[in-house]
Image (cartoon, one colour):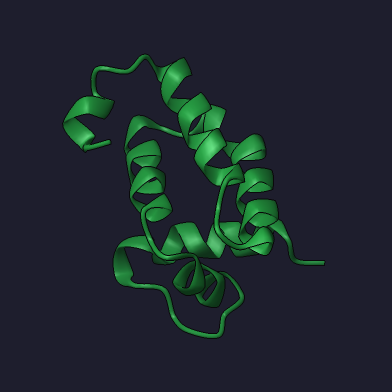
Length: 91
């Protein structure tokens, strides 16, 4: 879905869509990481935050996994969001 179309969604529908996309990844580890993060955070995110998260979900799972686990630095637009996702699972 392009961002212009996302503007036509209600906030509730957008959050549900992003939650589903967080659960249905190609890598099981990313399903777990992102669905947990989404459940805990999407409802409180600003519209800008949701747009950034939507963009993040379009990235390749292999790249996302390396970013979240700290194997590779995340690109600048996603750096803070990836840090937040990573901290969700720190012990």
